[in-house]
Image 1: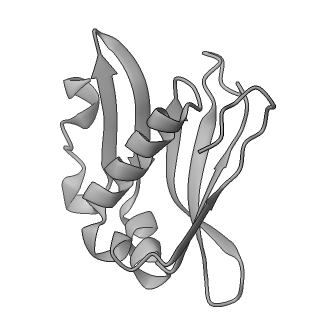
Image 2 (image 1 turned 135 degrees about the vertical axis):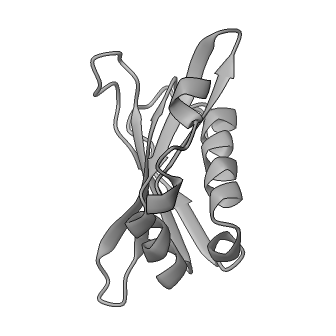
Amino acid sequence: MADFTGNENSALGDEVDGIEEDGIIEFISFQTGKMRRTFSQYPEVLLVDSTYNITSNKMPLSVTMVMDGYGKGRSTSYCCVADERTDMITAVLQSLKANNANAAAQVRVSTATRTYPESEPF
């Protein structure tokens, strides 16, 4: 995981984060500087949307988004997760919060969607 999170792109504001447990990657998130600025501009409403097993590794893709001043959703990060368990999505949101402390403190409403019936509720 250290190879991914070395953050050699930090001058551009790009951020790669993740959790590794026992040599198994649990999630990898990616956020560009533009995504971070978007989150800072429109932090009030945070949305999390996920696909079901869309990647070749059968990992759901989660996208965090905010609503801009025109009511359009704008991506603030992309994350491939091992699964959509509540603790996994919580870890993703904690990572987003850690990398965007000022914007995260201004979130007033958050919502998430699930795409398959066997997933547990948040």
